[in-house]
Image (cartoon, rainbow, N blue to C red; front, side):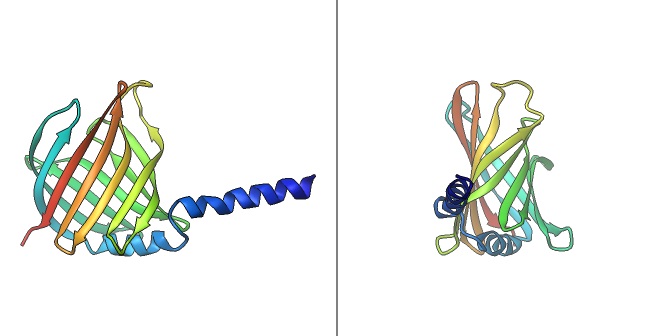
Length: 172
């Protein structure tokens, strides 16, 4: 019985890599994100129940002796959101310090560097004020080329879903 249970557990654990990001993808994706270092400018637009848009700038820099990439999204000269991309073993993670004043922690569930797409899903959220408070439940990073990226923050709260699209081009 114990041997059967061990086989089932090992089989299930192995299957998680089939559906999600493959081993080694996290380090490759983090290396790709390190290429974003510098200043960016662009726009943001909400879709769904929230309906606003405007200009947004961003800065990316490496910290932790190259172990993490910090993304500051800036509106009207002040950082409004910060995300820190880093590895947890072989997994690529991101902690998002949201304008909603909570901190979703997400894990890469799909990495396709040939297409330049990294998809993250929420693992948990710290500082969530109530069970129906809004938070980022997913993030899609699209590395369109070395000078153009988009970020789709998938937001959920109060039973409603919306997306904030950030479209950035490298500032020259």
